[in-house]
Image (cartoon, rainbow, N blue to C red; front, side, top):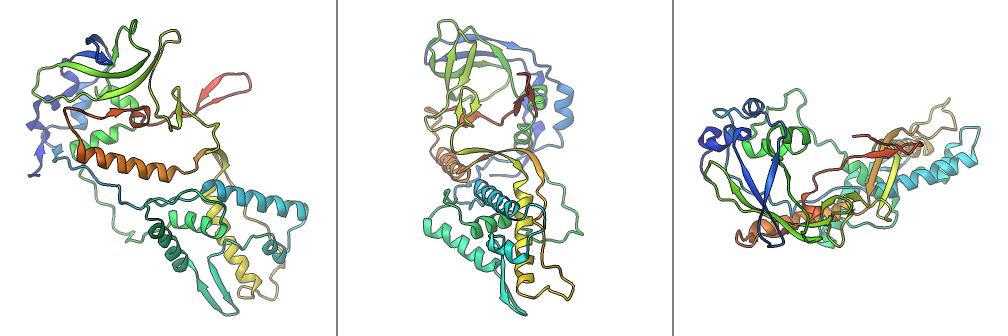
Amino acid sequence: GGPPLKLSAFPAFTNWPAQPLQLSIQFSGQAPVAATIIPSGADPALWQALFPPEETSVRSFVPADQSKQLIHSYPVANVVEHLRKLYAAVGVASPTDLPLIAELAQKGATLIRTVEGQGREWLNLDDHLEADLLARYKRLKTTALPPGPPEPAMDFFRAKHFHRFKGGNRENPVPVPDFDFHEAVAMVGNHPLLLRRLGLVIEVSVPLAGQPASGTVQVAEVHHQFAGDDQPLRVRYLLDTAKKRFLPAPKASSDLADGWLRLGTPDFSIQQVDADGAALKAIDFANQLQMRQQGRLKTADSPPDDGLPALRAGGVSVVRTGRAVRLANTFKTVTQANTTLNPQNPPELWADDVTGGFRVDVQDAGGTWRSLC
């Protein structure tokens, strides 16, 4: 607790990249090995420009408990598969002409509607569907719904609910956030190049000959010119000196293997359609179709046929079925670690804990790998 301070109250961090450091690395409890720090172009001027010592606030860190937060998602694979079957069925039945509205409904185009009624009386089903959705969380006593078989009406409503507009006055500009030092540094974690230029990622060279092929690795000794209470964490690793490969080890149930995502498992799918836009357009089309079929939007010259909404390619999307449940479990693990952390015996970390993102590479017809991001 206590009032926030300024970064100038912490001399070591007024210009972190300029701090001289010496490190030793320890493998599986063996004698520490001196590490050679590889210059990364850390820029003291950039640090002070981003974190002015007299302007940057430093607030006490209070871990956020996300373990009870409901996680809203939608089953992308179910949604895309429903659309694939619908568009295929309509294409086969009406390859050259627009299908009749009745035929579209018969093929299942209105199964995902969020309106219902007859004649001039209509009911918006959003509130009913949302109540059903929230009841599922309570019934299962969970913060994330597990994967399930296709259920078009609820699958598509979950997509709509995921993108719901929460209201607010658009005329009032969003206030400029007052990020404290911890929050600002955390956001820099999304920019690998900045991490190096700010000295927050330090590359080291360590002799690996004679080290165990697997075990734990940690920073054993840090020599610097400021007061601190270093609590090095242990990370599980895999070492293959023949292949010059040194990687954090994945957990047994991990989606990672040898530094890659295991895209070949049934839990992953690659989508080339804009699933978000396709789902929202399909719901709107289903609602319009339902009202036209039952006479509400029908006029004397209304055509009896119509075409399905155009699908848009959204590049390549990697979809992980069951991701929401895994995220909920991560939140629970983090909360438990924050409440039971023992500095004398810190938990061991795995690849799943330290991986901050992925780079997407695609292999072209000539066999060359090209990075997309």
